[in-house]
Image (cartoon, rainbow, N blue to C red; front, side):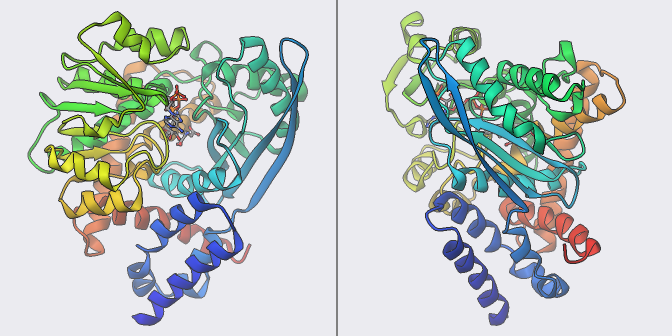
Length: 448
Ligand code: NDP
Ligand code: 2IT
């Protein structure tokens, strides 16, 4: 018993020592490894094969220079990344993030999470992540296009529908995917639809992919509430962020009869007690690419708080849909004190370890990102299926598939948590479920 715990502690310390300064990566590995002792007890051969040690080491890491010129002709140099973390279950799959904070440690934490998330979906996809420290804020369409073209001019040689299939993440949406696909097509002389997902449906994208992460997190929360005899209808909700995931989470919450009273961006929080007007948020953020502060200018009943803490606003359901470590222990305690009963993570690792502990101890239904936000990548896998068969499904059919996948994810996480003596704990359920699926394939493939 103590031997297995010591082994896991050693693995964590080794990761910290061999990846200095990558605090988000350390955090992601620690959070998973800490839950795996019961697995090694039940299946000792995973220890013999050093599966945890191997899973913590990315299969490959690519770092490259991305030079580009702005509209005035000035040259800029950014750093591009692609980490192919694990391909035991399928081609590398995961998003690209364009944000000034991107560095290797961030990409590795995201890639590591993606390995487990993608396994949990049950789809044939490995785990990866990439991006660049490019800041799209304030850049013209032409500048974004030149950046994407330069980025793809290096990355294309590492991609392919059977090798590595990127998609969007923070700062990468349909516009960027279009420019990236155009450059890939031009360089390779191939219309290889399946090389990127999140494409516009008019040229090979899947309907529902745009909505999938946000809708999926709400479906997951619905299942968590159902297990407690509750529904989403009539609940007061708070959703952080106002990007792709947040917008479609708000849309689905409202469709199911909830009231969303607050959302945010990296500058501040808007609180509208009558219910957030999604059409206004979409116009400001998706069309005008503006700031959420503009919402309060249009709706006088709403309050805008620069640098405000969205988690201090009372709610029953909270969905962090912006970025990592945005919900700390103090915020978790504020949510609990205000009567919050469920937290579903649309973002990747938005809750700090102290925050997670507080939520679990208080008995809040907590859906970790690996499970709760898996609807986006699952629908990417549905996009790959449509591309491979040169087919295009209807919105209704694709959404039904997404809904079933999210219900299955919830059920399997729930069952796995029970099997490993942590009933109701979706952290344990999702980590172990993802691990077992990847581990079985890795053992089958031998030492590679
Ligand atoms: P977007 O770029 O569309 O939106 C991101 C939102 O989060 C914006 O409102 C942005 O504010 C805010 N935000 C970003 N960085 C920070 C920061 N450092 N501090 C505060 N706020 C910040 O990205 P997505 O909606 O696609 O992604 C949101 C989260 O969901 C990320 O964690 C991503 O990894 C995760 N995710 C995304 C999936 C997808 O399919 N897109 C799938 C699964 C998870 P501002 O406008 O000011 O920049
Ligand atoms: O974090 C994620 O799951 C994503 N950004 C989506 C990845 C994908 O390949 O659709």
